[in-house]
Structure formats: structure tokens, C-alpha cells
Image (tube, rainbow, N blue to C red):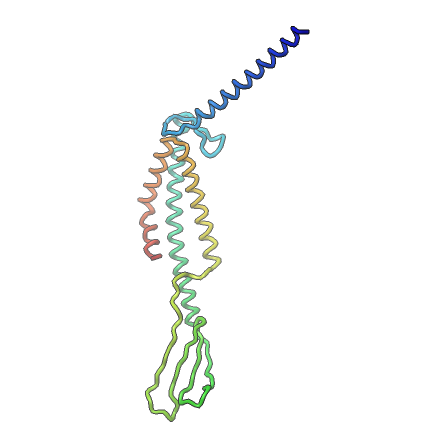
Length: 215
């Protein structure tokens, strides 16, 4: 009986030691994959568990894909700039056209003065025109109260909804690039910087032009 109990205890100890060894080995493998410094060797996970480029060809292919992704981010920035400029001009054109629609009527004078008052409404601001009566020999005078100048375009759903979608898409691409940088894979880092630089060369003037128009 004692021999049997001792044999079972030995088996339990062996199983415990095996489990500890397996856990330690797994942790060690995980730590080996998470290298906290720039490196060129493979084994880093890129976005998904299945995307784990290890061979030089796979790393080169992933790097080319990151260059394209960086170019796409700069293209999105240029597209947003162009559309923002178009939407801004369109919004101000619409509001200006609306402001130019003047509806009014002549009202009777409130007192027995020598002036008639014509009240108009322009974008919510009253326009008052004063003209002398026939008995008065003074020179006619007109006073116009102009509506305030808009500094911010109004909310227009067909403009602001795609604006938000484009911004969300650009942020998605930016965070994907950031996640690739966080792998510390030097090839990925160089590819992203190269792609952003080439994209700025191609689309930067469009982005700068849109920003200049915005100001």
C-alpha cells in the first residue's frame, strides 16, 4: 500500500513539474516574440494571429503592403482637404443665397412723424428703411442693418455625414499604421515612414491648399 501511495505521489509531482515546465516554456516563447527594440528578424504578429511573417519574402511583402497603406492615409488626408474646401464653399454659397432672399412689407407709422417705415427681414435681422413724407423737404435717408457675417458653416447633413465617415476611415488607417510600428519591426517602421514621405510628396500640396483655403 505504501508503495502504491508513493508511486502516485511521484506521478503527481512529475505531472506538476511538467505543467510548470510547459507554462514556463510558453511564457518564454511569448516573451521571445515580444521584442521591445527595433529588429529585422521575423516572427511578429501583424494585426491578426495568422499574419505572422517570418521569412524574408513574407516580411518584404508585408512591408510593401504597409507602404501602400501609408500612401492611402495621405490620399485620404488630401481627399478630406478637397471635400472640406468644397463643402465649405457650398455651405457659404447656400447661406448667402438664403440671406439675399428678402421678404418684407410696408407698415403704417406708429406715430404722426414725418417718416414712413418699411420693415424687412434678412436672415433674422430687421432691415429698416426710412423715407421722408411728401411734406418734408429733407434729403431721403436710408439705413440698412446688415446681417452678421458667418464664420462657421451651418450644419448640413449631406456634407457633415461624409465628412465624419472620411475622418473615421483616416483614423482607422492611422491606428493600423501605429499598431504596425508597435511591433518594433524595423522593416515595418522604415516602410511606413517611406510611404508617408512619398504620399506627402504626391498629395501634400493638395492638403496644404485645402488648409490655406480654410483659413
